[in-house]
Image 1: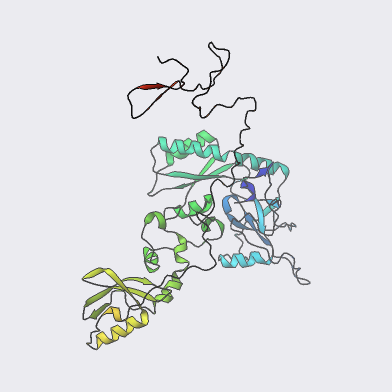
Image 2: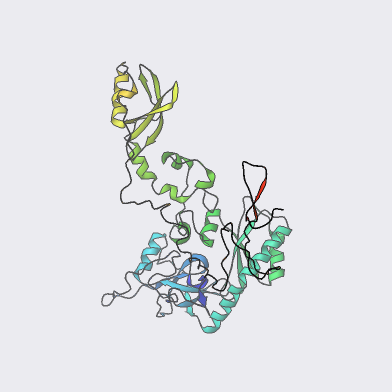
Length: 423
């Protein structure tokens, strides 16, 4: 999300992009602003703009005036005015683009209320800042425990220390008004610092913390979106989406902001459609609309006495039937106008599901070599074979021939060898 919170950092420097905060964009996809005027020089005699944009934790940005005429560039760590003490931030934008950003946010660059930059941060300032940042996560866990102990219906979502470590801002969310006067006393006693409580909305909380959406990308509110417009369920109805709260809600618990992105396109396409509640009068009965395909210009109708069978019509055909109904004329049936939808195979797509074996990467089993020292066993014994020489009890495992055989059609035993006496 940003260089200071990069998960691949080593000794404070991120190992991922190798720019260490000095890239053309001010951070790793966290409300980035690309400095496309970086390689352009100012006209002769033109003084550089004296305001810069400074970024703090989780994308919080402020504008400061460079009264000391410091030579600043993107990625410089500076000490700025705070109340009380000073704060530490990273310069994210300089030059004429700062004037455009201030105009976009409605800030008058000639105002005397714009705070100033003290100096470039020294190594001592950076060490104090880094130490304070390391305290934030364990403090957040402890602060939640104290809030739960007082049974307050609130959630401590984030803690931000001032650069000099003299003050900590606790960001929280709550549905109702919270009386946290006793909680502030416990915080000040527990953490030994000045405490400031700031309530944020659920969308602002998701924007500060960041995350991955259901689309697989980073949240819009944490990367580029700053204008949180209201989203209604009508936006989902116009786009014919299922009104499932689990699918329509984002990580903030509210309706997803992206529902408004394509709403205008759907609204323009729906202007050419007849009213969804329009009934088509036929000799077989009235038909009502069941479904629309906005971008293909198709509508599905079903008779009121036969909802199982749907008939697809083009919007031009629907208008033609409506015009006939206005003239008090009934068409014979919808089947005369219905289209036959033929499912066309998808092009440039090869479904390889099931064509590959799941064990194609497994190592083949090695076959065992036959034991050459092992004597082969006799598979089929022949009748009339002589006894082995030596007599007595033989220790080998040879299969001996049967001495008697049973004739199926007789009930007497015939000796196998005529020379042997009958038992």
